[in-house]
Amino acid sequence: MAMSDYYEKLRDKLGSDLIFMPCVAGIVRNESGEILFQNKGNGENWSLPAGAIEPGEAPAEAVIRKVWEETGLYVAPKRLIGVFGGKEFRYQYPNGHKVEYNVFLFECEVQSGELNPIDDETFELRYFNFNEMPELALPYPKSVFELPANVDCTY
Image (cartoon, rainbow, N blue to C red; front, side, top):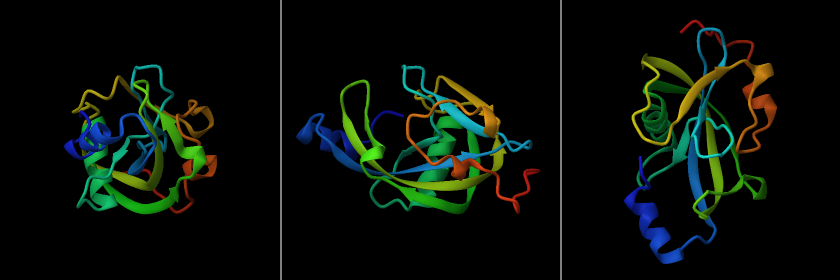
């Protein structure tokens, strides 16, 4: 999906200047416990299905929406893994827009759907084994991707 009206209005006023952006990301696993990553096809590193929280939207609602838009999968957020931000989560898009993300990271469980992106932000989706993860656009601690001992990956 293109930038929302809310963020377009902010950008109209601020140009490419740095803005704080509350957003969500979802860790989605297949039956084998592999993690789903997204390649946007624009030269950026791989990422989790993720995106901005819109005004009036709860983080859990946002992760359901963003994962569906970017993957075609309907998910249920099962637990909040952590909230990340700070200078390490600053990012500059290829168009020059600068953001500093505050990311609500959720472990998600697939409820239904098939890998088929709804929006135009996804070039490729691929599951990776924990030990073979690609280089990511944001510096999440590797520990957030470890499969918790009490998680059953036979959804």
